[in-house]
Image 1 (tube, one colour):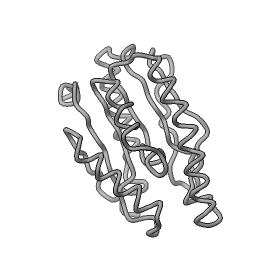
Image 2: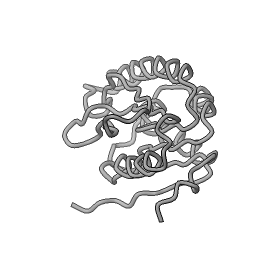
Image 3: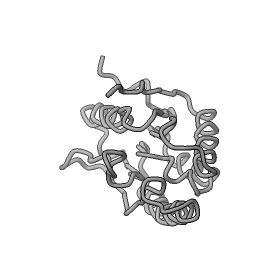
Image 4: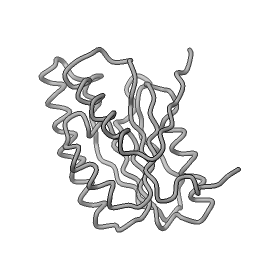
Length: 181
């Protein structure tokens, strides 16, 4: 059944470990919305970095659709940071860049919001501000890292705690199974 009703007027969160298929699942849901004719109502906040060593990556929505696609240059702090201090600096820089996307999104007035890799904002951003942005859309499909790939650190613990806070305010949570290599 190729329905989107299970997502309409709801907050859906897709979680999983690195390379578990979170972005692919998000794209599949996006394609269902596009087939149903909702393109003009959709905005995408792509908060993911470019792929680093096969980890992460932008969403790459289909070309020629009337949706709004907002992204910026994002670092992968834990994969590119030299030490804990540098990792935190990269996360804070990401947060500042992402907040500029939030401003652009608010100007778009779209009822359906897709967020790719929310945890890149949650690493150093403000949870309340993130929820306020989500609340600008009646339908939200979000994906976020929630796994054990990265070693425990202050940043990883903050990200995990805020992802769990996000889970508490979602209507539906889709947990992606770990892929075996």
